[in-house]
Length: 185
Image (cartoon, rainbow, N blue to C red; front, side, top):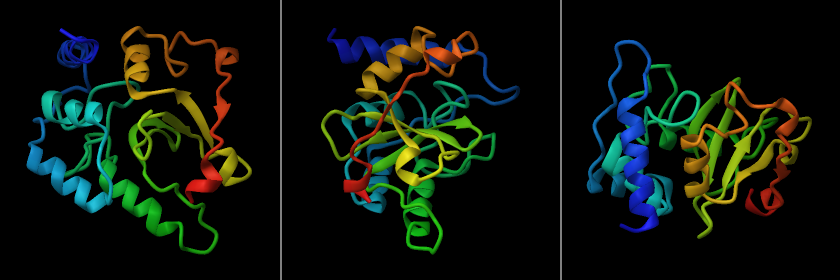
């Protein structure tokens, strides 16, 4: 079993054994046709690991904080719209006066509360996971590198070591600004 398979097995086990919101079970996994439709709507391919999460485990509902957003379909139990819907809405609003531009190919995948999102940079092979923190003074100051890649982000969640965790030390959150923002809007 390779590293990716081990990671997916660990995520799947945790997803199915972690207590969730009362009354809500994990949604069904998506089909490869669902992924193809999502990619067509987005205009870019999803990274293989992200695709595997949605096709092998569930259409969201597991992961840090409020869990992965559903990729497509109905909103999550907490009311968050799908990742595809949110990405398209953010990109559309970027053209409206006074709205912050949303970077091309950066898919919101996980709500962290208070308007913050974990996002995957789908335009690079690195699959950098970014933090969008909307309380900044300027749009380019709202983007930080959370983890260098999606696999590391998932391992951090599995290990309970994410900066967003209940036991995290606020002073330990020393995320680096995302240098690619201005080139991606």
